[in-house]
Length: 127
Image (cartoon, helix red, strand yellow):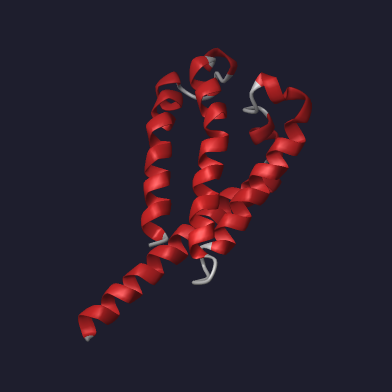
């Protein structure tokens, strides 16, 4: 019985850690909007503020959703879809690294597989 309780407690902590991660990430879109506006791909340049707000709201909503048992699975898919939706911005940054001189080019390329880690963390944290 104690082992089961520890597993449930660890899973709950993981889920709350995941929620905190996404809530902080989403909050940054509103605390530092210019940082996020800079990475919006050129195809969406006319909608930078809207894209940043939408992605911030998506991350906040997903972070909240994974905390509740009844919305956890929806939150999982919501956050995974959000990761897919923002991936083009990460590709844009890596391919056009000269536009982001403050960030070393290898770090921009390293972000691409890190998105898969975020997806894995999101999946595991919502089981």
